[in-house]
Each structure stands twice: as structure tokens, then as C-alpha cells.
Image (cartoon, rainbow, N blue to C red):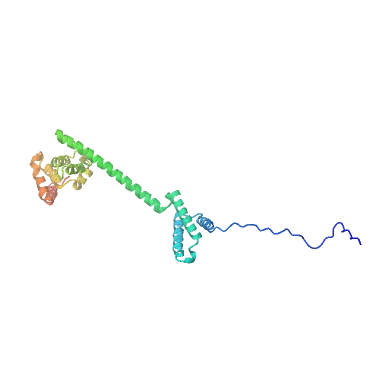
Length: 248
């Protein structure tokens, strides 16, 4: 008995041959990376204030989660918190001038620095002028000089250097120039301001010199003694003498 040969071409059947199944390896889950990517999507377009508010929420959530033992091994929450902190810092560093609070802090710091610099320059000017007036005193030529704006503060500096000893000669010098409208006292505004910048004996000197033309400085030392013992009385004397000579 012979075996029949297979027919050619082979007969078709309804069955289809499928390729064997091959498992495609999946990327392992990375909760920390997923959390960071989620934060970046949320933060896109945020302002510094909005990012700071989101950071506060993340910190609150982290505190709440820390109370649950089943979340002790969570890595996504800390990753999100760290990413919010990084983004907030980046926004603060990259554009500080766009944040109202930061801009106000910078303006306040700049103003304070400018004020300190101005105070330092003024202190240096007063010290230099005090040295100049002291040299004129030692040369005996102070009376030949004319006062400048700010010499009232220079007189106070000389008083401080002298341990609080009142500088009568400088005060009398200022009073004479105030009465004669010399130096910066040519300006009516400077004469008006002198009422709050000069001491009562100096103002009394000024008024007495106006009333008694040609009066010698030595004749007016009683005003300094009066101011030392009764400063309020010296001020009253200056005010009274002003009434006696109403025209300025």
C-alpha cells in the first residue's frame, strides 16, 4: 500500500497562524519622578506669589501625611515638596524685580543705604568745617570769616569735642553775622531757620546786637551765663527782645 503524495499547492484552511506572544518590558514605576513632573506641569506660567502659595499647601500636606504610618514610605509627597521649593527659589532668583514684596524690600534697603551715605557725608563735612573754624580761632581770625550753611551744627560739634563746654566765642560770631545778615544769613529763610538751630544765648546775642549797635562781645557774656543757669529765661529774653524790634 502506497502513501498518497500531498497535493500541491497545499489546500487552504480557515485557520490563521499567529506569531508567538512576546512580553514587552514596562518601565518601572517612579513615584518621585512622577510627582516632580506633576509639579512642573502645575507650576507652568505661575507667578512667584502663586508658586509660594502652592509651596505652603505642599508643606501642609507633608505635615498631615507625616501623621499616618501607612504613608511613611511615600516618596512622591517629599519629591513634590522639594520640587515646589526648587521652583519658588528659581522664581525668586530669576525675577526679583517682578515681586512686589521683594521690590519693596530692595527699595527700602536702597533708601536706607542712601540715607546712611548722606549721614556719613554730612558728618565728614561737619568735622572738616569744625577743624577749619578751630584753626581760625587759634589764628585769631574767626571774626573775619563769614558763616556757611550748617555752621550751627558745627558749633554743636565743637561743643561736643570740648566735653560739653559751651562755645561762647563761636556763638557770638554766629550772632553777629546773624544780626548783620552776613554769610548764609543773607537768605531770609536761613535767618528764619536759625531760630530752631541756634541756642537761646546765641539768639539773645543776636537781638541785643540789633538793639545796641556796636556793643562789644564782652558786654554780652551775661546772656551766656543766663542761658547756663536759666535756659528757659534766656529763650524768653530772646523772644522779648524780638518783640522790642519787630522788623526783621
